[in-house]
Length: 230
Picture (cartoon, rainbow, N blue to C red):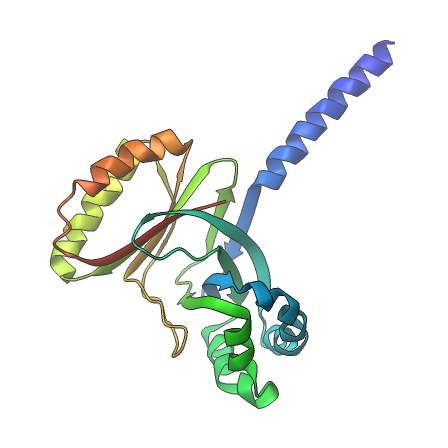
């Protein structure tokens, strides 16, 4: 009986541990690797077409060093009028490989762009060369918010960003990832000057910050998108 009790406690502990681990998505990049961020919405009819896209385009990308990373659903748009259904991360071994894929894919898959148009109603791409070894986690049990800003004035926006980041910390948020100096490409262009993912204990914690954020002076901001990922 004592053995059963100990075993049951261990089983419960391992169960909770595994549950916690499945909530945490881990990302690791070496200096010079490239992080893709894709914002997508799949058309209803696109699901049946995806198999061919996967079979034709994916092998070319993988040969060029592409690695598949976790993806997230987008549950809500909180600023801006743009709300895709999903956010997808990807990794390339180098900027050279990332850009060579863009240059050569049509040679391997002539209808590559048409396939994307048939499958996706939204397909926006930004990619970032990682300047130093970087690791970050996204805990899906928390409240995670993606914010993308386009600046109108460089100097004034720098002050805005500093104030914005201070408010995040003051209100108990955590800057999980911050990205600048992105690149995008013709047909899929989406290139904010500043993109960040913040993590909050819950929706209520974020909303306290959110209401303060809306009261800030936005004269230096050209545009903003903000949405919740899960």
